[in-house]
Length: 371
Image 1: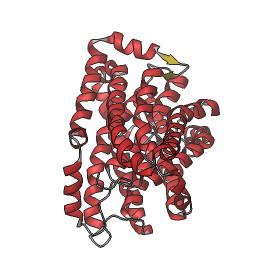
Image 2: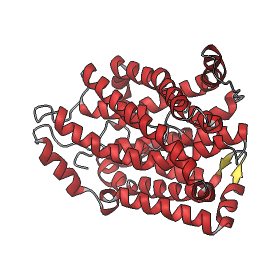
Image 3: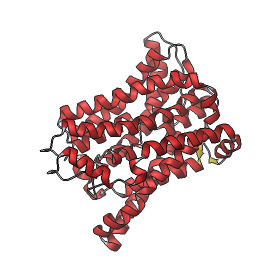
Image 4: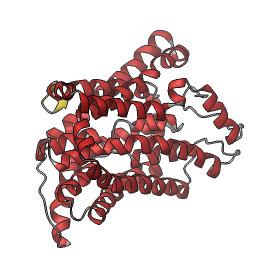
């Protein structure tokens, strides 16, 4: 990217030229990311279908409900974006009440309500899948959103801050919202009710593993690296060396996830299509609504992109863990959780390009995508 901190071009560069400059500086891995993700998904599905022993090995290699290989892939994926954050400057982001307030409303009021509505409208005859999607809707994104935000030239400092804040809310609110959307609200509306018994520790554990470890590593890298060699070396030498590992971790994680559930996905294609429809609608509506809200609030492109991606993404790791823990690995709820990344990964890659188009359309050269 053309700016070592934000990945955005200087303000005096016209957006069309700026995008060409950004694309020109992307590595082959970055430029053809949709292709590599498609290949990774196909490889994972084939491994899971043709070599069931691979899926069994991945499922067996876990501590409690956390798959160790998948956790390693996610940690590798999340470390580079969190190492890039300038933690000393987060105070200015915390004071942006428009950004923080919009993120909390989108993530904890609108997002779960929208998924609940879409699940009941499009899956009224499939209660297991419907419940699985509601569980996905309650799990707000803490992992891959950092990758999408970086690729869309969003504000990575703001992304790290919003992810941390929403993670705290996730620990506190997930079980309560699960009870409300699966038991209380359906009862009020005269609909079928289900229970979701998930303890705070199960949720906190997922957040601590998938966010806490790479966050601590990122902070330590920034502090120790700048102290030992200075900021210029850290941002111009160290960060470019570790940046590709975020995408290596992403691709490895995609392969493992799809290998783990390859047989279930390929043996039930019609079910996958039914689950995919509300997910597609959810991602499109949440991203469009969030970006429109950011425009309305007067957010610059970088923070608007960050707001939109942190609202549109979901924490499928937590959703899958909850579905398996409560309903079982072979349940329809678990399958709905697994279909989440099957749809989310390519859709959010597409939304990266939508965001870059929106920068040209809604943020003219005089703004240049600045904050």
